[in-house]
Image 1 (cartoon, rainbow, N blue to C red):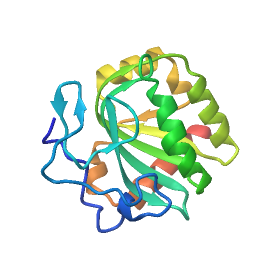
Image 2 (image 1 turned 30 degrees about the vertical axis):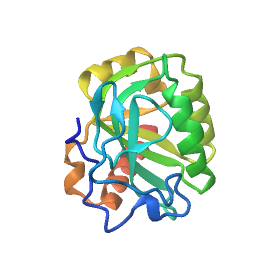
Image 3 (image 1 turned 60 degrees about the horizontal axis):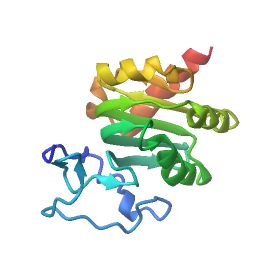
Length: 187
């Protein structure tokens, strides 16, 4: 796991540690000191710890004018024991929401497991975003994690989309394609 780095080809466009509105503003990173783990496996030091013991993230891009964010995830999403959705909501998305972000694209191809609890935080999130025309999309979640996500009926609140070509596109193209997808879905 230590070799899985957050996607870095957009760093010339955006870095969370330089964004004064980011929850990770002024954070410093080591290229050599591996301190965070998912279970007993060290992860690359560029991943951001947001309070979960098993799930890490990297804000890859934010556009405050268009009101969207692209976030990459790594690890195990565990709502049952760790209540990761609450931590994600309170410590990340609620902060971004106050800055005008209402459209969330999560890249979850490195979310190895998903464990559900109740859906109250997801329902609350959807209600919050409906007022602004916002939405949440999770891209490329592995099949076993998607299965558990669907079994918990969380697709009532969040869209799961397979979009493997995201790395070949600019963030604004990804956003536009997801916006078009959600517009078609609603209509």
